[in-house]
Length: 177
Ligand SMILES: Cc1cc2nc3c(=O)[nH]c(=O)nc-3n(C[C@H](O)[C@H](O)[C@H](O)COP(=O)(O)O)c2cc1C
Image (cartoon, rainbow, N blue to C red; front, side):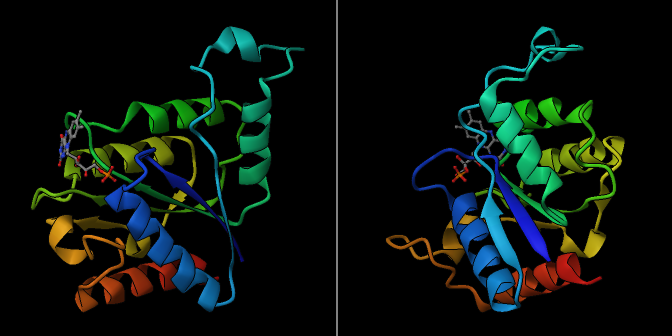
């Protein structure tokens, strides 16, 4: 099982990246191969750069190859202004017409300092993946609220055992065949 991870936060000390690292470690321990997708260098989506006969920009080609080589995609993201961070929506827009998401198993995790766990962005991400005909795996989807209290302030490691167990269940569901 090959899992590609996508992070909706580019922040060096991102709490969502901490969740992603923990999920990736759990997946690797369960025998999966985990790679992380680089979406920070993608140009803004422009269909003119992607038309018939046009070679897509190199970072776009790399992302499309990474998705096509994966069996499953794990998206972990914050919510910005009750929506999906632009950097992540931009990446998904580049993948809509090229079709690599079709039938990919997809888990969606949103983390937030708010108790709501980024539920607006969570719902929007699920809907976008569904529209892209990815297979949203319900049991691999989580909203994580009050995230700051569940991570070590210095290392970002998860200190909340309940959260670790929820992540382990989500990873197991994503990797189940
Ligand atoms: C521009 C901006 C908008 C935000 N909007 C929301 C929001 O709508 N809902 C929410 O739960 N948190 C919101 N936040 C708080 C983020 O959830 C918080 O900064 C979080 O730590 C970002 O995720 P990260 O730690 O993975 O980078 C916002 C933060 C920023 C900078």
